[in-house]
Image (cartoon, rainbow, N blue to C red; front, side, top):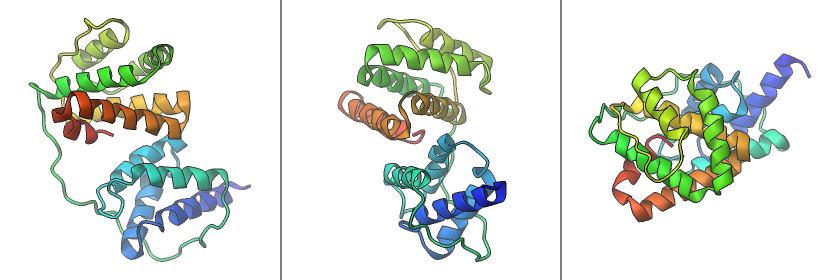
Length: 218
């Protein structure tokens, strides 16, 4: 299959999957977002792409279903809609203020998330995740202090670990995204999503006040 034919197939897969949730201009805007920012990226980038679409009311709360549809069609591309030809328009997400810096509490929210993730994963599999994340850490665009605290947390064991550092929302979002990519490589996207869902459920029981904040990064 030529590169052009492969790109057309991927475009039809995305278009078909999103057509279950969007239509008209909203559908074309979403397709344009994919083409402009994600078409050349690996399959794991679909999580970030669908996360952007999650700001749309028709997709909000359905990220897992959308990703399942995209992966299913990628593995078995049958029943695809024709290649769309309508002129695209830029994707316009629902306006939402970007969370600012929370030096007193954002690090605590993330610490609860790490604890929850460790609690829901088998011990040996969490060790594998820790090692995989540490291999990625050097290349992540984070401030040196945050990077050092992350390395200290992931490179140690035991309940006495602490995570306390001034950080901002975009940095934590990058960290969570890399954890998700590592989970996808370890488990596959579907089980990775199930693991994150179990993590949120654990937080809802143990630290319900931080759930809304951590959902912004998933």
